[in-house]
Image (cartoon, rainbow, N blue to C red; front, top):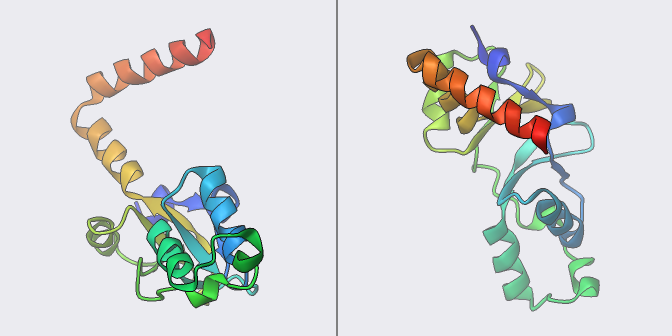
Length: 151
């Protein structure tokens, strides 16, 4: 088992671009209901993660509460590159799990630093829950499937 076992690929992951305006970034956060989101550049390299708080503080500092003002500010202006460090796809599971202790998601990059997806703490916890409580997990999955069919 390796990092790829837990990977949510880039195509299934929301992210924003480094050169997006604050308005574009906020719209994406709101659309997905996230409180934090990975940031990449146009070459696909992982640049960091931004949070709702980052947007809020910048908007407050700049008094940029209208859409026009938000169009003059960019995600790169609020990016904290040291937040949510990425793990290389070839990293050990131990490294991944250590990072997941402090981050809701861990960005994953390839050997060239390109963003290839994320691993969520939730996915790791669910996997280990299923390992340690297989009969309960199976019942929960069956109940969820039955609810999905009835919906």
